[in-house]
Length: 332
Image (cartoon, rainbow, N blue to C red; front, top):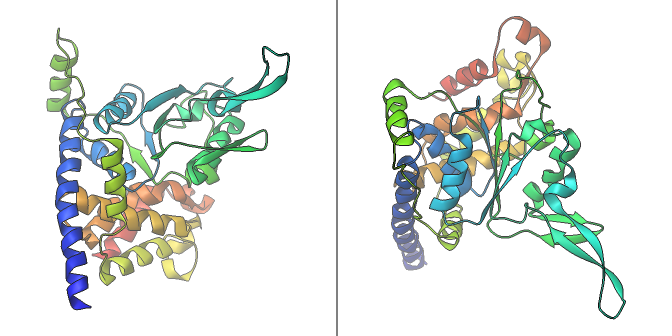
């Protein structure tokens, strides 16, 4: 029995070493094209390694779209892009059935698949589309298939949605429903680059030769990495940190005084997301087991879109980021 466990551990370690090399090469390949956004690149890779979907939030011009395009090339995925606009319809995403007549005069319906049938779908400016169209992605994101005219159509594997979103205070946007936000494993904030990174951007993107993305993994490599992430061991202290953090982010006694400021909080889906994300972060850094530091590092992107403050808390100047920061401080 003991020998069997040792062999299994050895297999996991050997697989982890190979996979860690692959994902670190992918991170370096993305970093060669996307400058000054190391944290964003890391969180986007963690999202995909965890088998989830990511929401990139930031003002226009911060390379959100370019990051998704680059990830498609580097990870060897069949990538497609949808530009969300107010007049976009669900059929523009999912596809539709068309009536055809054969040479023999027989009529029948044929399904023409939409751009959602891709391994990496970029939903560009997702909050520009109406809630009806946004919700067309819900089934695809959660169940990996879509239903059109009562018929199920399976999506390719792996399937990931990386959506970009402009801040809600900008005109012409529709807030994403809470049910849809919860389907995103992480909300990744994309901020302005620092001065050195912006200097490098100026030289690299306005010259005669621009750096091009190069493949570092295949879709099969990525799926193997995703399977490995689910096999990495998680210590009891990390599990307790995840449970403590998520449960204290809900209204109720477990949050103490902070709980009184929260209108609604994260569901168990947030715990599942953190459990996968901390393993993926450890693997990305060449470690074979996550730590409490991983929980602290990923708390904000996993929780911030799954919480809302009470009116009284907002009136007092409280913010989601501030509340999550105080919850993280409890973990030490």
